Image 1 (cartoon, rainbow, N blue to C red):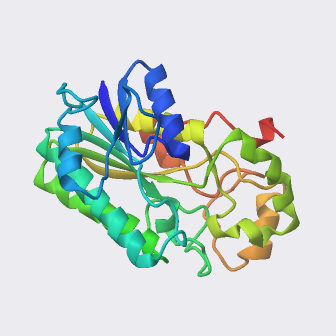
Image 2: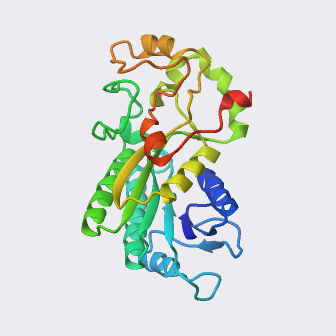
Image 3: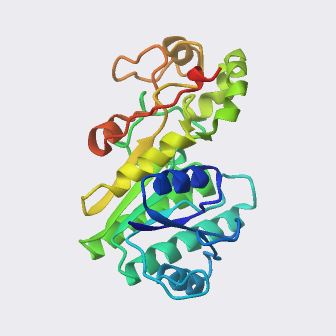
Length: 283
């Protein structure tokens, strides 16, 4: 396929672009930063004219074919990097522009980065149950997370307006690269230090795998999936962590000693997603 990836210069984006190219796809990175070349186009996603021009196939100074699919990863990636207002204005407008332009250009398959934050992170208010999943309503606790929730609501309406459109939201956990894993053993000293996302993470390479699986999904409409590694960042067992940090939270099923508490059952079942990488293999 011909695939446009916004934010392909970011931490997850680099892994996604590399993975899709390895699969044989023609991938263009649409970003505000990156290396000049045939696979990169500098685009300000808050400028609708630039976005629709890019998604129409204009790249490398000449007209070309449009795209079969869109992967939207570009965003201010977390709360607290810039002001709340700047986060909202940038992320909300960029996502609207990208989604709207994709529809105008006839793109019928969109996969984009939602976030684990919509689950209620940083869990200062405990989760409703453990493991958390996609079944309970969004609980945004920051402006960044609020935008992620509103993006999901926008996707619901866009797919209602256009029954042939597929939009898949991947609620990525904290993205990690192999070089990040050396710091993981230090997390054991204070279980509250990583309680904010139930001790979860996702290897960028497995995040890229999830994107590829979602692009292959032939199911018009909107859906959302939690994407996390199969294990936690901790060496300490789950039973001990839950008892110490979330003693009053209901555990809905048996959890393994180190199994992720961000349920990926739905992604496994419906996308065929299966994490291949763990920090335990590197440290």
